[in-house]
Image (cartoon, rainbow, N blue to C red; front, side):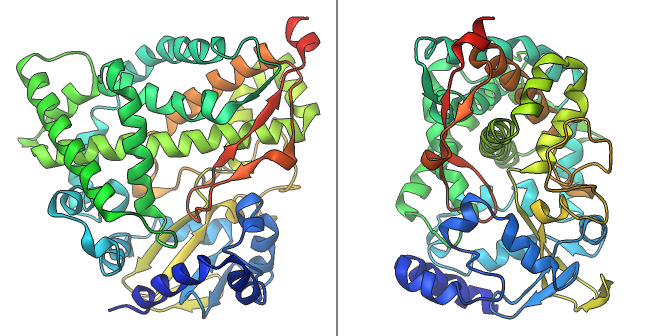
Length: 431
């Protein structure tokens, strides 16, 4: 059993007592990395990490932490970097030990947690389904969905845009992409919300609810895949169920696993990205107004919004060989936590990294990863973000956000607002 397998349940129990947790973790050299301040705005803590160098060791977490941009690219692109070890560690910890066979079989096939050569085969097959044709057919569908969601709150001067837009939109888009009928969209959103709990080990989950969710997911998508093989349509599930490369096809379990992975990965991360982008624009009204007035800025603006406050903050690897990194030696089999939010603000790479500049033309952000695990749905997320923000600018004008009422989820990996009260500037919106 790895040390983390003991540490995670202990930290989880401590976090159930907020006063005790704050008293213990606030004394840490990097501040409380598991407290509400960190979830609300993690970047001051990252600067404490960076002060120790681009790669720094923390004994409590038994891990190296990478805050340097080039060092992060090196790890993410390294053939010695492995992600499956994180899955193995989790499966040693309660409540993961209580997952049933269906849940484990699907979880083990999530692309994020699969190493080569299995990853190479799966990604090759799945990549064939994310075609330019699929993306192009989605743009009008996304615009229609955004319009329907905002029509529902058209008469409200202030709207919480997390439940009104950011949460439902990505799952609806993915449901449209996969080919799931509208009457099942609410179920898909609930299933995705449950499955994403697997990536927050310091909180845990109800294993009964998780197993039930995976059982239902497995039954539904196996049956739907059988329907698509019998009667193919122009959707992603048909592609997944029928794709073939050099005689290789996805098994039924792989079809379900890829569908679920695309669902929860695209749902939760894009939800977070829409929320953080709206907040960034509200905090920088000059940039918000410039974007509304200069549509030619969109290409660089999307990169900058993704860089400034990314929805995925941490990506973890284990290296299979000793590696010199940022002036230190990372030993084989040690954990390496890549702090994507910090790497995107590396002052060696980005000028004024804490400032939002929508015309920034520097190195590409690492928010979607790098190397063989680069996010397969990055272009879809960017498309959704552009259409959603354009619609909000058109309908809400010079909007403001009451930051005292913004709340955040308590995830270390995914960053997501749970409440985002956006006030409409009616005069600007109708001008």
